[in-house]
Length: 272
Image (tube, rainbow, N blue to C red):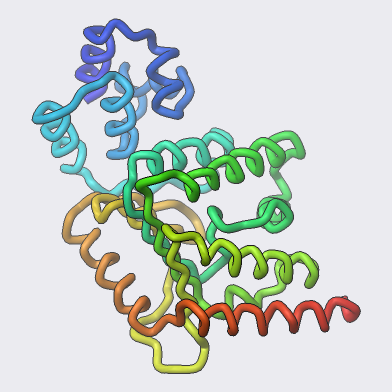
């Protein structure tokens, strides 16, 4: 695969630096992929093929070959070594080619909906992250949020109610964060559902995951990010998403729940 990708880049007349930039990866990583020192995952292959302008049957064939080993696991320690901000940029590149993004969260407010203060609180939990790297990572995550305002894009978010109540930062910061959720839920291309604590659960919210046009899934675990484009696996997550969506609150009911939790944070701020 690396040799093929190198041949396609050479035939395109593009430099390695240009392709790497377009594919949201370092030139060093691209070089290692092309020389076979690093095995590319499906996302890497798709980003590189898009960067060099490969389309149609040729692209489909190469992606099918990459899917032969469709499930990739990347340890968080490896992502930390490469740079969290680069990971954010890679996600942004995948999102840019996605028409419908579905995201289920049982751990934290979705990154595309986070306030700067909430983002800072999230990455402050990584004590080994230097201040400069943290600042670049926060900026990269916030830059992804411009996608919410792009025409032709659709976003479906499902968030478990307990996520809205977890105090990962000051109560006033949480209150402002919940205000932002209410505001963004009014965007015409954004659907925000909250899975309430009251009521029967359709499944166990074991982890959070993102579906990109039902063609690719990214799943977060404690030790790694798992990416799969195996159709049967993608279907499992698509069906799981819809099961939770069927019991979620939307619109006026959802906003009333979120605003009620927000008001609790405002009342509790003097206690912390």
